[in-house]
Image 1 (tube, rainbow, N blue to C red):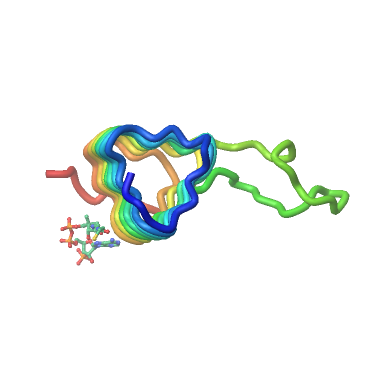
Image 2 (image 1 turned 180 degrees about the vertical axis):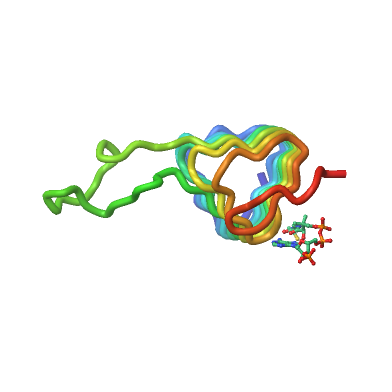
Length: 159
Ligand SMILES: CC(C)(COP(=O)(O)OP(=O)(O)OC[C@H]1O[C@@H](n2cnc3c(N)ncnc32)[C@H](O)[C@@H]1OP(=O)(O)O)[C@@H](O)C(=O)NCCC(=O)NCCS
């Protein structure tokens, strides 16, 4: 791990030769061997990043996200795990971990996600797929497909 101004909690399972740049906040997650994590990335508990991945700066990886090996995540990519979020319960008390259900997301091997994309909860992005910059991915993406737009639609097969 490279040194810097990071908050890497003791419960993070770090693989070998992971490079973490400045201002990363990670807790309760797993990061595989030889992966690189850019500045201002947050990685929440119960998320997993595989081996040889590149996570670019300003990305948010939330609880329930699984990223397989050799995946590229662009800058400012937002993952989502709660399709109907609320700050409070019906009685006005603040919500806790027990008051909502985390909906998981899967990014398969060698997929690439363009900068500023939003990946909605419950989606699987297929092996080798490419998500365009700024896309809003609302449904599963087939392997080796290129998708773009809001909502993201099929553009072509990936070369
Ligand atoms: C989606 C993407 C893969 C398409 O690349 P491409 O197949 O070479 O497509 P083109 O540039 O020839 O564009 C084809 C059409 O899609 C549109 N398009 C391209 N990228 C788009 C995007 N991100 N969102 C919406 N539309 C897009 C183009 O305007 C063009 O439309 P037209 O046919 O009406 O003129 C690419 O533009 C992209 O967004 N790559 C991600 C880059 C990135 O975020 N890198 C991160 C690290 S720098």
